[in-house]
Length: 119
Image (cartoon, rainbow, N blue to C red):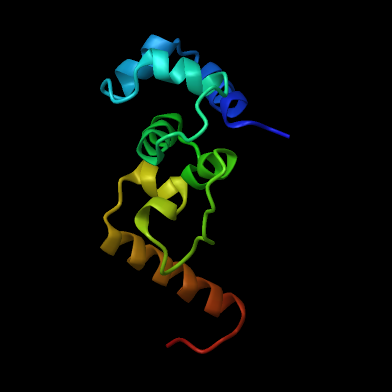
């Protein structure tokens, strides 16, 4: 079973970053010493804010990191909060209103595929 520390280490290495590089990329919101503790699974209750910052710079799923940290994460989709949505929305830096429009458009496309009438 994957651990939060193992996943954070994997993501960092995929980027080719050192712990200091991560610290710089998070604008020093995550110190390299705290990241070291996270990667070694020494932190028992990591900050969701820190996990969000790491998910954003790594291009990873915030929900996945939260789950690995032991937090209960509600299902994602239309009607969920911005922080629970796909990493694609985070990577594109969409506003909440823009996210809703994208989800509406996807719903429209799916209705056309299924032969449902346009609403």
